Every structure is written in structure tokens, then in C-alpha cells.
Image 1 (cartoon, one colour):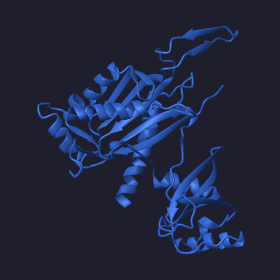
Image 2 (image 1 turned 135 degrees about the horizontal axis):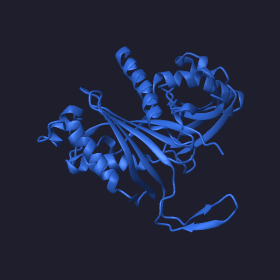
Image 3 (image 1 turned 180 degrees about the vertical axis):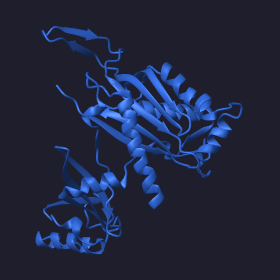
Image 4 (image 1 turned 45 degrees about the horizontal axis):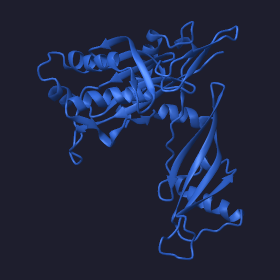
Length: 313
């Protein structure tokens, strides 16, 4: 059975640990402060830190995920650090079933899982870093990458801004998704006045409206009007302006149907969603694992798009 491979893009920013109001630290400054005695602070400092932790981290008990280090590649000039991990789920009793139907029990402490590829990118002169994480349809080692980065930062008295890495995408990927997308459902969330005793105890309620196929073609200033008209057409009338809404879009990309929901409010009608990136088949090896070299080339292309969009913004 063939399993699709996907790529997720995350960004992260760094600030001093236990200093909530401290400013974001530039990547260069972090490397300089964290590894003052290292000649090549990226490789001998950050990369070796991540590598050593990846070799020693067998499981993250909180997330029930496990991994062991497989291989790495470093591009010093571009500050790319590519890594391959073997990993999967721990903490539950699992079974190995062969083609004859014979079942073997694996201990719950053992890790059963495929290979995963990832890249850390620490751009020069930026205060934002990137992590590219390959996943399968229903399995990702994102918690491991998150934990590795957090542990390295903590060792040097730094932490992640907002305490986590943040999923992102490129405008190119958004436009590609929206090119074939149509609104499937619009969900209205009405904010009620907590001082109004006539209202139910719930602070919100939802109304789902199907249709509005031309919603995304409307000017932002007209979208709120369209939502209110759709409600009115369904014999529902909202008083006041205190409501938010989200739109679920459906799109077919590369033969795969995707649904993505973007949250908007009545004052901001911008569309910002993150579609899944389906990795081309040529990036997989004969076992349907990610090919290390092909994945590096594929992520190179995504980074060039990010750089190009940054220049234009």
C-alpha cells in the first residue's frame, strides 16, 4: 500500500529564558552568545547540539513519540542542517503482522515507525528560523523536532517565543490551493453580551451556511455584507457587529482533496490558510521512505520561494 509523503513548514523565534518582555534575539546573536568559544558556531555549536540530543533522545514521554538518529548533512554557507530520524509511536502495545497473518507483539517501550526527514534553517541576518518536517498521512515527528530545539535553547538560557514553533506556508502555496478551491462551509460565531441575562449561558453560538461559491471572489469590504445577506436569506438576522466567522475551503491538488479552514473576523477579511504540501513521488525511495538527497533538493526549492517572496514584501 502506497503512503503519501507531506512537508510542513514551521518558523520559530528566540528570546531569553524567563524574560517575557525581552526582545526577540537575532539568529546571529543567539549563535554568538550560545557558542562564544566555537569557531564555527553553526556547525560546532548548534548542529552538534541538535545531533547529540537526537542521538540520545529515545522518547518524549509527554507526546509518546520516539526517535533515533540516522544521518545528517550540513551546508555551512547556507546554514542548512538536514537530518534523518527513525521514529514512531511509543507507550502502547503494538503488533507486527507478516503477510501470512502471523502476529508478533512488540513491547510498548519499543519504537515502531518509518524514516523521517527534516531540515533546520538558520538564515543569516534574520530573527526567524525555519524547520521543514516531512510527515506521512497520519504520522509526524513534529513533537520530536520541537523538543530537540527547545532543549538546545534551554541549555543556553533561551526559549522559543510563544513557547512553540509555528506552522506557516508560502504565498505561492496559498495561491495554488485557492486557484482550485471553493468555499464549502461558512461558520458564524456570534459573540453574546455577558451582561445580558436574557442570553443563554453559552458565550458563543455557531451557524453553518453552505453555498456562497463566489465568496472568495468578492472584495474584502463586501464579504461581511455577503455573510449577513446569507444569514438573512436563511431567516436569521444578527444585531450589531459582534461576530466572527471562518470559512472552510475545499480544493483538489495533485489529485488529492484537501479541506482547509481560515478564521476571519468582521473587521479583517484577509484569507490566510495553510494547505498540506504533497511531496512528489520522485522524492521517495523504493521503500516509500523519503529519499534524503531528493528531499534536500525539494526543500531547496521551497526555500528559494520563501527568499523570493521576502524580497518582494
